[in-house]
Length: 306
Image (cartoon, rainbow, N blue to C red; front, side):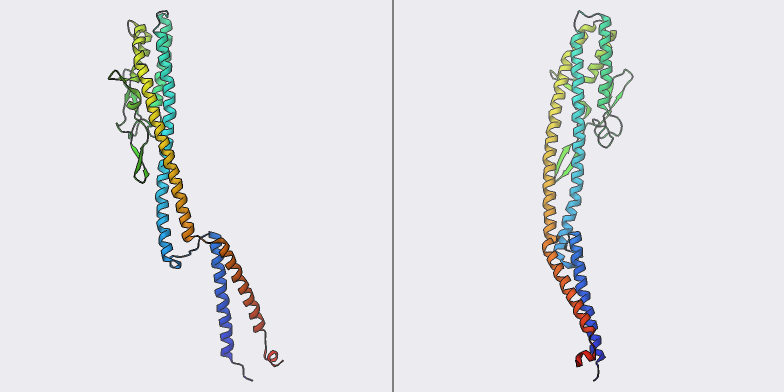
């Protein structure tokens, strides 16, 4: 009896090819289960791959929008906190001006009040020069330096820009990132703009004996301080409204992100249950093929004769 070597070679080649294909299929399914992604390369599904690339670009752009939204929320949160402190300090100066305007106080007592008012002026200038999330002047607009400087007379002078600047939030939406110093410290008094920092500084000097009638100077400062407190309260409302708007924008960004994630999962994600069943099926066939090959390859001519 003659054994056909060509047939034996073909048998081994076919068996090797079949089991290699089964192993690759199992490895591919295992990889999908590991990554959660159905596509290994664009050629697996060109249409789905194109959609996934579009979603990936949208994610990258959205990441910038989210970062800008967080930055704007951080800056406005800092502005809100600073405004609260400024309002407290100006309210304290107004209370002190009422005390100093009393004719029952003597010059020494008014001078003591003037010292406190001077210290508050220093604190107000420090708050006016607060920094934002990036380390820039929070109330200085686009300036790279401090929002306020001190001139030779000890008065605070605004050095920033007239515009606080806007931050892009995506989808054509923007928000003004903060306020400018003049918006906070310039109040309207019967149609006339008054400089709140100047009022506080002048009051401290007047109570120290810089004018002939410091009590009257204290009474004169009261209306400007009251207007200043009201202006700060208005600006707190403005900042609060912007923060509410940012909350809405952030919520929408989260919703859109979840929608993109669902779209990606549907387009390129793997069905875990289906993949596990397919893997189990492939492994079963592979094991059966290996067992069958072992039995067939072990047969000899004598096995056939028997």
